[in-house]
Length: 498
Image (tube, rainbow, N blue to C red; front, side, top):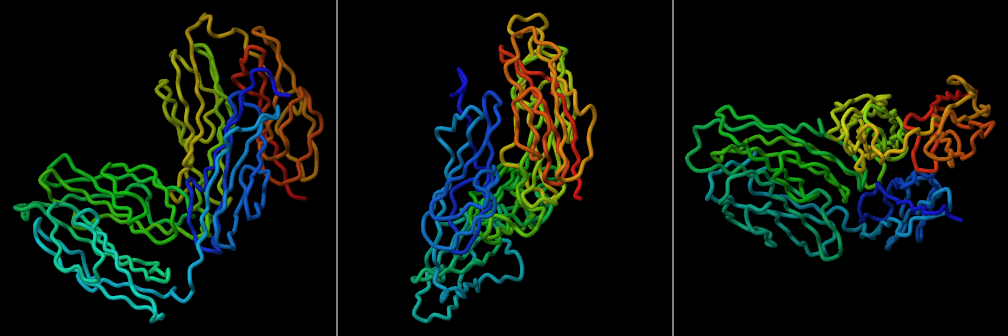
């Protein structure tokens, strides 16, 4: 049965972040996680209709290929150590379409304006637009869709003719061509139109820079990128305004830092940033990042899949008194396994400075309050975990009756030090509790973080490690009042191949 007062865990599918539509034969990388209000160890079960999940009982289910067209539902159920499951598990609806191969070479091209350079005009002037298309299937009728990026109404004409742009700014005009048999041009043609305000020809245009991502990137379907920008103006005509164009992947944004953007369709996107000064002069050479979204959720570039942040310690929310410390240990996983990870800890206004250390260690809280500690992880391609890990730390004044005194203090007696072993060897684990005056100790958790299954005995004995790697082992103790050891005992087990 379940523990009295036990609350259900919550399961989260981080990849894909939304429902997706893809072509037959495409693949998606399914990544999940779970949280439990009491910090109970969790097990996972992936359920799917019509497709095979490679790792159905792991939080990261792996790459799933959709070989047949149709609609599929994939869900993740997290269950705690008392057998209580998430009552409303996360679900993703995957729509797989079957495109006719006879229409795969459909190609639309903008014939006017020329593709040789950016077209710059003054507000109120006109630009002439025309197009052609080619298709090996002569029975297919072309369908034209012009998107003027808010500068003018969209058009379904092959040749829209003269189009007036009345507002200053940068506009990415996109031509998408499809046909009546379901084919479409996978690489829409684009022209950039810079519209300057009247009477500003003598002024120096501002300069915009895309700070994140730092360069062109490749990501998987359904993954997320974080967009940040800066700008300068030699004439000091401030404030500057910003406009992001995501090439149809997401709505345009006027925030300087557009934040996280989810790419739910495969393709190549030119994300452009235009900076405009207070007089209406825009950067004539907008900063651009090319984002390649592959049809599978797992790109071949090892640095391109979204990583997952893991806050090893504390394992759950904590309540402490002013002057007490908590040990902060971090980790992260990258779906492709071989890209460098960057860590950023923030401590929610507690007075503790943010840090880029993977594991900041023991930190002392000297100001009473409630603080949300966040661990953000990104890889060296600029892709960040879309769901950073957080812990709520409640710090009360010394002597406050809201904090039971005498938190339990767990110790690892054996092994007494970090260990280096070979695959298939065992390590003997024995725990001990030094003190717990707030309430009788009722719960022990040994977490091996992938080296072995979690255990709930005080002294679990011999534990075998069957996979090479470096594993952090954490011993957590909780008493009857719900107070946890703020500094869980840790050991590092290095497992070498034989």
